[in-house]
Image (cartoon, rainbow, N blue to C red; front, side):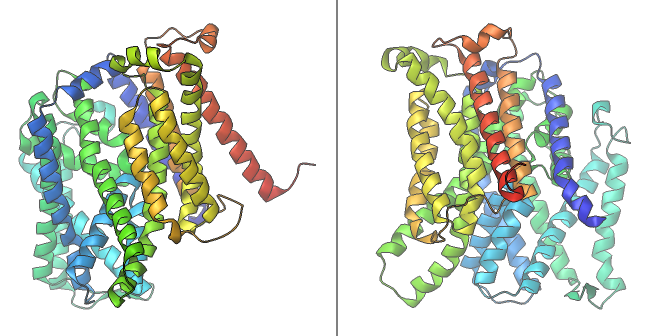
Length: 516
């Protein structure tokens, strides 16, 4: 029974995600993508830099989670290694979800550094405990002291969050008092879990509370001019959104986080709030991900030039463990970027230059190719975790082609730069992919499949939102003009759906044999 429920979990995640997109559509039906772009452009630069500074500070505080967990299992590791595991673990967890991201990263790194599977499991339990105890304690206090109403559209059983606050605070107090009631370890399926001492519990609360306050302050810094609530009230809203995201298991909390924030904050314009949330995702999630990728690429390059020493040998050990994971998720991100780019209109300021520089047929072809390449990167990305040389070769080729089509279909140099970073990281990590074989995507699983479905659905929703004012007709499919963004989106979406259908059919056929 439990096994069947696990198989149904991705379907539940998709259902939650689809529901969030539907509610977001209702919330944003009176706005268009040009208003959101304009709102992003009008965010003061000093606020962006302040948010970036808080993000750096927050990731330093996050090291405390892994540091306390390592201390709890009494395993000696230098702070440099703990910091690496913390940074890469949290970055991937925030972008791809805990199970698909952070847990896998930590397992590969810590196992390469000598921790046993039992010790890693204890460490991950400690990380989760530290986070949730901090959430319960801080949210409990904030919800009690500064309660806010819960919109009926969210279908919560309470009118405001104060009753939830008492429940959460009681759980946190119970955890703090637990060592006074029970001194012996808790044993779960043969795994001994030591209860933390009072001093460790206080440190857990401090780290988790600091993390949550700084993270919420980062978003508040961006949104503050548009909000009618104080920081204390906003902290409670942020905590509720964070808990809902974790419980939903939607990768990156896409759609779910935005929906809760939009529903609860007081603002005259949902478009400006959504613009701030998008900027927050870039600063807090995406930039740290590419910092990790650049650090890895530079390190790989330095290893290739270095003289073999014991230090280099040891560093290569953990580098080879983490490189395929980081590149796999970066490939997934590259595919998402290409799909989202294909679903949104060309920037108006670049349209005039485009008309004089690139023939219309080349723009049309590049648009479709870019979206199909995005879908292909989504389905092949996981094969990098198996160190497949065929996957590395195809993905490197497609990423290079993606750079070209990004420029041809709309002078999208930001997208081209992002793809270039991934392209050179792939080249720098060539020696990590040595597994031969021509059959790709044998490592596909339900988690990865649900992530792909979330990304593709999100890109289609984004296109429908961007062109909601366009009158759809059969003739729209055959409209070819420089400013024909909506027809290009429709044709590219069909290309993506056909590609994914053929891919799924080929996998089904390879597992079930020829028809008849």
